Length: 219
Image 1: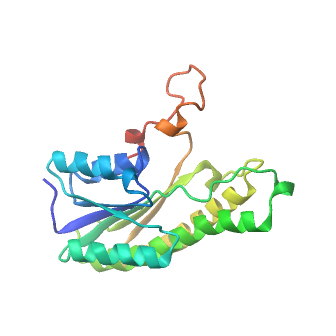
Image 2 (image 1 turned 90 degrees about the vertical axis):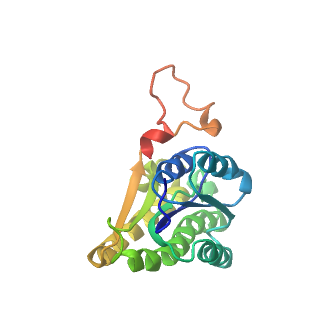
């Protein structure tokens, strides 16, 4: 049975890692899920509720500060006495694959900005809440970011996407050093491989077992 004293919030909940993380956290806490479309989280909300947990789905665009602010107002109204135990940033934003000399500055800024700006917004909303929970939480309140291979290795054609992912990793490193001494754990987890989701079914068909990473293994 999930405790109502604390809750978890997850940004980016689809059929893969976000769903697996929500199901895992729901065994201990109520779970708030943010996504741009309700169909991204509806099945997961229902599954958690059927299992006896509490789940709340909210439509929000984390790259839009006003949209995210409204979402957190909704969270405060729904869970007024609960504190934030963990925040998970799993948003798949800013993806672009294009030869560098064909890349336009607006495309670069759009990809780079969506990745960096969205995480910046989410971190600014969650870190004060995580810090507030330090004195009462039995475990260090935690901000977790799922990173991609492009966070540490920039392949050809991925200049814009990798630049944004590198920036997000750098921001996580800075936040870890700033908020760690205050009792908040900040983790950037590089998922170095292809996640097995409905969208990736046609990719990486090598016939080799375990070519793709199972979402449950990540969570």
